[in-house]
Amino acid sequence: MGAHGTTYVRREIWGLQPDDPIVTAYANAVKAMRERPEDDPTSWSYQAAIHGTYATPSHPRWNECQHGTWFFLPWHRMFLYHFEQIVRAAVIEAGGPADWALPYWNYGLGGRNATLPFAFRQPKLADGNDNPLYVAERKPGINSGSSLPGHATSPAGALARPEFIGTAEFGGDRTAPAQFSKSGGELEETPHNVIHVLVGGRGLMGDIKKAAQDPIFWLHHANIDRLWTVWSALPRRSDPTETPWTNQSFEFFNAEGQPVSMRCDEVLATLPGLGYTYDTTPPPTPLPAVPPGARAAALKPPERQLIGASQESIELTGQPASVPVPIDPQAAEAPMAPNQRAYLNVEDIEGEGNPGTVYGVYANLPPNAPADLEAAHRIGNLSFFGIERAREPAGDEPAHGLSTSFDVTALARELEAHNEWAGHALLVTFRPVTLTPPEVPDENDLVQSPADEDRPITIGRVSVFYDA
Ligand code: C2O
Image (cartoon, rainbow, N blue to C red; front, side, top):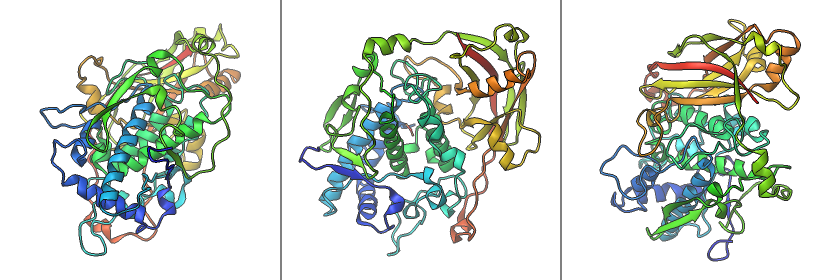
């Protein structure tokens, strides 16, 4: 329970009317926080800068978001928890609901849920004042109700991952704390990164150093946080028990603007410690955790065996592009063992900035394949969220291009069974993901910014690995 014995309930935004007191109280609080001095840790700009900012000189706790690392989920849970307290205090000060909690945006439900919530789309409020929840710098189409495609919003792939730790697992791989490392998990890529770029394009949400300025950021992250609670409650899932994770602490500010510190093992559950829950049915009781020793042994980082790599780099400019990845003929002599897994890595991704385009990644996709055929060949999505950050690593971060890993075990086994694996080339295709405009266009369409020009992205290598 919360400090005053209340359990705060985070509600799905599409289940609320656009003028629900929870929504209007949030809009008013955003406005009030924007009016606070920039060096006040409870101001809108300071909170956003904790996530990331281009502003200098730096203030305490600025640029501390954790991406591409196993700290992605706990850091953002703590960030939202403290932000929610700051907003609630502003809501109460303005006479709003005392049990105010951050709503979440469950785009994964499809239908209207796959469009930006109404309250965030209109530049003006009914009374003629500016809408604090509206941001012009979003991807063209988003503010007029275009739909995000199902494969981009679905958490199914991430929720299916059996482990927390690993680059192609749920929560990301072991790294030191870093604002942008290169070992993100499945949930971080889809739907997290993909939603950032499909909503933000080259605007606020598409850039790690501006994203938290958009009021929708916090509802997106509440949904990501909710998905962590869903995953943790599934059978045989368990959160990290290794001390470099559990003992790691991060610092934030409370509603009074005072520094506070929290450890990862304090945010494993939202109740009772953090005092909030989601409006969904409580997930089933998790199975008892595996003893730490056994888990750690089972999860030692897998040795990797390279069995294929593209010969040339690929440039992505907003059009479909393909590259062959020849699979080593010797892989025929050592067929995959029953518990062995295959991964496709997209490596050394570089570019000057986020092009605002998300690409679907496909294997052996026939040229000009229609949408229904695409689905059967889809490996995952590629979004470039954080590409600016990866270019200019700070502090002790390694200099690196972005990279992403996909589990392609089922595909490899199927091709192996048909003798189309070893000695053959896997054709990997990148196709831009498009939004679907609403049937009845909104008048906002008229004020949309012109389509993004694509900034080129280079992919250094696409490779295929087995874990050994
Ligand atoms: Cu720290 Cu959704 O980003």
